[in-house]
Image (cartoon, rainbow, N blue to C red):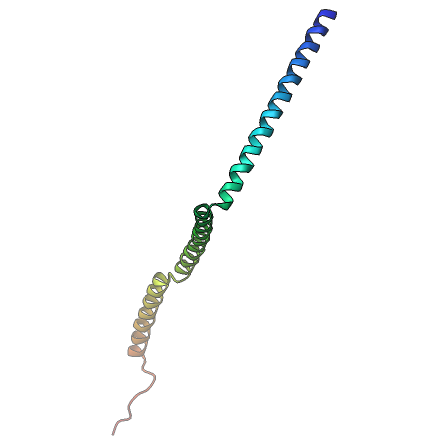
Length: 112
């Protein structure tokens, strides 16, 4: 049992050493990243590219909003079937009115 405990302790120390090495490496990489990032921030071309990317994102969002608006308004103004139904109903009413008036006229011309 004691031997197993010693092995675990040794493994723990090895892992801690590796962890320390990984942390040091991460710090170095982070510093390098920050250095490159600062250089990019100073570069005029990189700044222009960032500005253009921002404009493109804004334009994409505007295009999406307008497309959605147009689609919504298009659905709201899809009136052709309703207009056809109204025309059909008017024809039916006119036909029925003509038939009823032919059978019993409301106004008769006086005989002279």
